[in-house]
Image 1: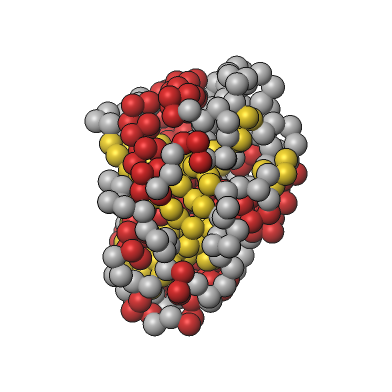
Image 2: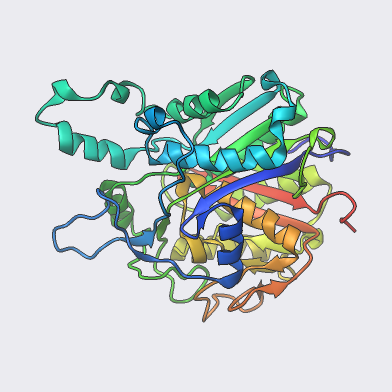
Length: 406
């Protein structure tokens, strides 16, 4: 639900940590986005291919996370946990969260069922010797393990929990973090879109649904689109009230919209997408004409792209610039909403929009697509869409930092 009235002092994003197939850290992310560097390839991590002669699964995998954890702890942490700690470390340092009392800091992790690949590998390795299964398997399969891992390494003592909303999980974590800060429950809340470590079973399920592209590239919003491609990703955004911002202010979270459409599976629903956007705009005290940039959910699935285009037409967003981050880094699933929100805020800070790769024949030429190369553009008000299986529809409205807004 939208806020009853626009917040005169909306929460701000004051620290970002990000990891993707472009590398670890904002510098690698920024450079790869604006360069439009394509990093799609056959997936190579163990447990991600069928190895039975069927066509390979394509996507994007990141370099292994940097070793931040103590060796004893690192040995017990999976890929999702190590990536979470790495992005949280970057965001924490930039936001200067050591200034705040630990009891006034919260953490919301967007994502569920985050370690499917590692569970598949464990089944392979221990099926015939279950008595030798390491004790850590008694808790690492729980989503709360990432909360506990992060809180054990950083002084987070307000609260830490997960939220699950499929591919909209990262965006829902942002919505929840904004609400926690606005309510005064904490002074700063970290929204973390967790790395969804998929297995070949998950990928085959997407293929069976008709949602997964054949590769080797992803074509969101293009006539040649044939589905999404998975991309490892993780991001953390620190959200605070302006008076608690201690570092860089990337932008203001002016409004959020979050609704369900009553569906169970992957069916997109333009009516609910429009409602989420209208709720976010109302909370921000804006109308669609005020939006000058849209970062689409834009997965590259035919039904998803068509529904989202219908939503943008109904909202009257033909004047805005539009791009699709998934065309560069793939679909981060649980992490997607947070990683793409980070992309919005980095573009806002740089005054530059990243290209949409492989957008050779846009489904609708009437929109202001950012296509083959980065383009200069000073974002005043941005709209970010994020949708998830099970009927979740999220819209986020970001505004330029105070003093830069016109």
